[in-house]
Length: 149
Image (cartoon, one colour):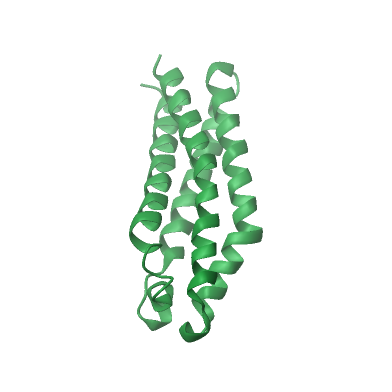
C-alpha cells in the first residue's frame, strides 16, 4: 500500500473520530449541562472540551493537507478531499466566530448566571454543524474508497 493510501485512511479515521466526538457531546454532555453548567467548566471539576477538540481538529487538518499534497495529481481522490476541506473549513470558521467564543464564555461564567434557555439555545444551534461534519466524513470516505482502488 502507498503512503497516499495510508494518509487518506488516517485522515478519514480522524474525521470519523471528530464526528464521534460530536455525537458524544450531543448525546451525553449537551442534554445535561444546561441544567448544570459546572459540567463544562474545568475549573469547577467539569470536562475540558478543548483537550479533545484541539487535538482532534489539528490532527485531522494536518492529515487532510498531507493527503491533498500527496493526491494532487490524482483528481479522483483530490476532488473528494477538496470537498472535505471546504465543508470542514466552513464548520471551523463558523465555530471560531460563533460557537467557540460562546462556549468559552459559558466555561468562564458563574454557573448561577447562566440560564437554562441560553444554554439550550447554544446546544440546539450547535446541532447545525452536524450536516457539515457529515459532508466532510462522506467526502473522506469517498476519497478513501478512491485511494483503495
